Each structure stands twice: as C-alpha cells, then as structure tokens.
Image (cartoon, rainbow, N blue to C red; front, side):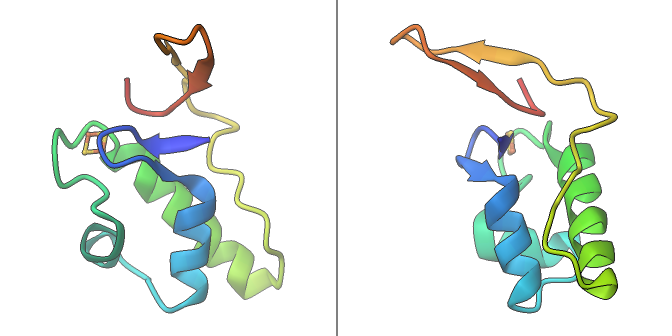
Length: 87
Ligand code: FES
C-alpha cells in the first residue's frame, strides 16, 4: 500500500528502510523522500515507522500501519484503484 503518494513510497519500502537502519522520520525523508512534498503522509508514515520498529524489536517482519487508519482510495486514469494514506 502506498504511504506517500507524492513520492510513490510504500509501506514495504519503509519496512526495508527500517531494516537497514532508519529509525526516525528524518531518516525516511532522506532515504525515500517521505513527507518531503505536501506532507500529507507524515502521520501515516510515522505509524508505519513505529510499526516497523516495533516489529523489528519483536522479531516480526510485518508492517501493519494501516489497520486503524483511514484508507482513502485513488482511482488512477487506468481505472485501477490504489489505497493510500495520503490522498
Ligand atoms: S509528501 Fe508524501 S504524500 Fe505528499
């Protein structure tokens, strides 16, 4: 699922960034560009970051940052619907 629409960043990319050492929003901004444009993804990215960090501590690899979040959808020109945090 997309977390940052402006930069096409997914929750999996955030999870991988955490696995390689990202631990703060600043790290995600520098590595992936999260929240560097409109900023609408900041809250969701923060939840994903926390989820990934807690999963890393618990030894699980699953990021579940979207379960309690509003998940607006974006209908692409192709008719494909994407779910995203920031829309
Ligand atoms: S900067 Fe992430 S959605 Fe705009």
